Amino acid sequence: MRRVPSSATNSSSNWQQKDAATLPICDRTMSTSSWTTMTSIPETVSNDAANNKRLVFTSFNPLAPITVVMLHVLMGSYLEFTHCWPQLPEYHLLIPDLPKHSRSRHIGPFSFALSADLVAQMIRENAHEGRAHLVGISTGGFIAMELIKRHPEVVMSAFLSGATPLSDTWKSINSQPKLSYLGYSILLHSPKSVLLKATGWSPEFQNEDHLKEIRRNSSARLYEAGCIESGKWSREDMVEVGKKDKRIALIAGTKQDNVEGMRDMGQLLQSLGSKDGTESRAFFVKDAVHVWNLQYPVLFAKGIRAWIEKAPLPEGYEPLEKEATPIEEPR
Image 1 (cartoon, one colour):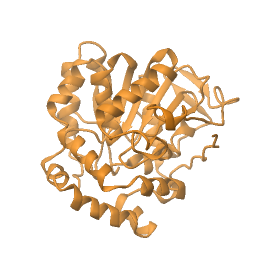
Image 2 (spheres, rainbow, N blue to C red; image 1 turned 30 degrees about the vertical axis):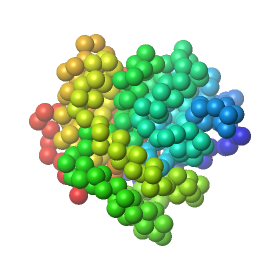
Image 3 (tube, rainbow, N blue to C red; image 1 turned 135 degrees about the horizontal axis):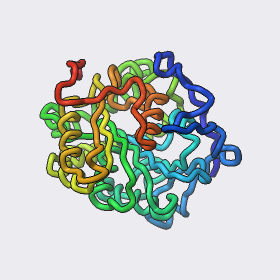
Image 4 (cartoon, one colour; image 1 turned 90 degrees about the vertical axis):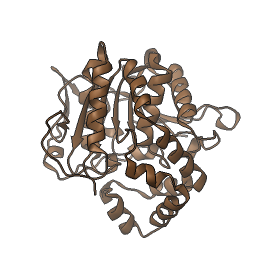
C-alpha cells in the first residue's frame, strides 16, 4: 500500500514564519528536494503482518543517508506525524505503528519492552547501517528510552518530549485507569471543537483519518496497559538510560508536562554520560501542550533537525538550566 503524504501547514507564530526554501544544517545548506526527487511517495511496509511479529511501518526518503525513527503516543498512529515528515526530507524516516495500534494491532500485548524490541528489530533490518536517531513523544519517548536501555547499539541519539517519571499527581490519576479512561473516552467522542480545545491540538493540523485511528485504537485494556507501563517508569530507569551514554534531548511543554522533573532528568542524564551523554540537555517550549507535535509540528521538526545535526536548537526552545527563568506551571 502506498499513500501520498499530506502537505504541511505553517503556523502563524514568529518562529514558524522563518521557514525558507533551504534547510540550514550546521555550516552547510541542503535543498529540500535533495533526497525527495524520486522518493516523494512513502512506502508502507507490512511484512505480511498477519503472519509475523514485525511492526508495520511507513518509510520516507529511503535514499537519504541518515535514518530517523519517529514513535507516536499511546492510542496514536504514524499519522500523528503527518505534518512533521514533510519538514524532514533530508532524512530517511521510519514511522511505525506500535503494538496493538492501527496497522500493528495484531501484535501484543502492549508493553514498553515488547515495543522497544520490535523497534530495534525494525532498525536493524531497515535503517542505514542498522542504526537510527530516535524521536518520541509521551509513550513514544518512554519506548525510545526503553530501547536505549535494551538495545543501545542501534541508537545514535534521541529527541524525546513529555517522557519523565510521573509526578505524584499523575501517579494518582494513573492508579485509577478505568476512571481516567472513561473521561478520555468521553472527550474522544465529543464534538471535534471540544476535543481540540481540551487537548490544545491546532485545528489546522488535524484530519479525520488521524482522529479515526485514535478512536479505533482506543480501548480500556490498551489505556490501562499504557498507564501501568508509564507508572512503573522510575528514576532508576533513567539512571540505566544515562549509563548507556547516548546524547539525549528532553523536551517539556510548559502547559501540561512536568517541567521541573524534566530539568532534573536532563541533569541526571548529563551527569551520567562519559562521552556523547555529556551533551544531553533538557529544554522547554513555552505554551506547548503534552502532544505538541500536533500543535507546533514545524517547530517540532526544526528541533529534531537541529539536535541530529548538533546545531543550536531554534527559537522557541529554551534550555532548562539549574537557574532557569520561572515559567508557567502546568494547569
